Length: 194
Image (cartoon, rainbow, N blue to C red; front, side):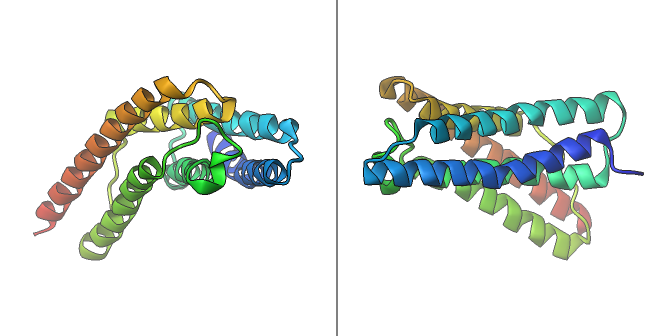
């Protein structure tokens, strides 16, 4: 099958991630030097929002046009993870404290990134044991991605910090629940191979 429109949009999303990273790094460095360039922050926000919204567009196009491809099932989660992990690292910890008020706490980034590491390692184990991996998107995974993206957008926009605590707790809950669901799916897949 030729490269579908949904796959092309996913590739554009992946190519936008370095632009987002550069905007946030240069904005943060500027704040640290006392030379704040708000345009970089807003451009980073726009790029991340575009990546986030185009995720829904490429998924809708792939389903509605019946163009779900193996390439798309690999690239789409890669684009999601790369964008989210980049943002989680850049917007958490000591380096983000000065540039982003509020910023993401380190524990939150650790929970979110740990889930992704566990899923990747689990997929590699299943691949080595079973010869193939069947990953079915789950509603908990989509809810987790939505809330993680919301927390990141919250920080990029600079909304009030107090309600962010609730957003982070809700997101951490869904992150843990989705990790457990995917782990259970992996165990069932391994059991079938016995």
